[in-house]
Length: 203
Image 1 (spheres, rainbow, N blue to C red):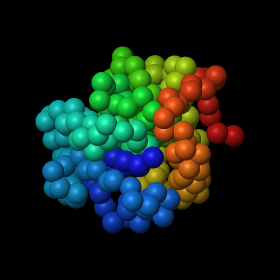
Image 2: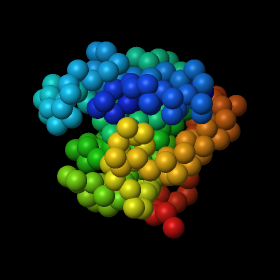
Image 3: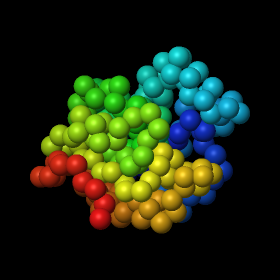
Image 4: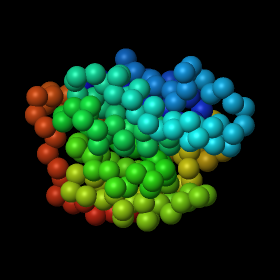
């Protein structure tokens, strides 16, 4: 199953490629911008411009195009996670796709959407502008599984961030690599929902 990596507001950085490519060879990397890199040096300006330009909708359309007609293993970070959430609830999403979304705090604005595929949403415990608990509770369903990574902050999967948590990051990537390898032979079958849709916390 092809892997699609939807990057955060910083775009497709060399650090992101170096982090993910050893786990997902041949992955498709997507940026929220028209180019790989972010055209803004100020993150706050980048976020406000992205939102003002209805960036989530256009980013979701970019994921639609990259996924095409086949199933995809979707991995999204921050704004990329929210865009992948929109894709997962759209008619363009293949029923055998699967998504893991990291710290998509803006998913709270689209909690009314219902994904058509199995989704795992991993939130940081500490978010500056949103309650991870509230967002997780709002979206949890039979096929939407939520997990709050204890002791982490937004961007804990970003090697360039001061909040980077390498132990947790690498553990998630190893788990995703294994999950993708296990699911790839089952492309013709729709993913079965797990029984437990409760909000989980790491121990």
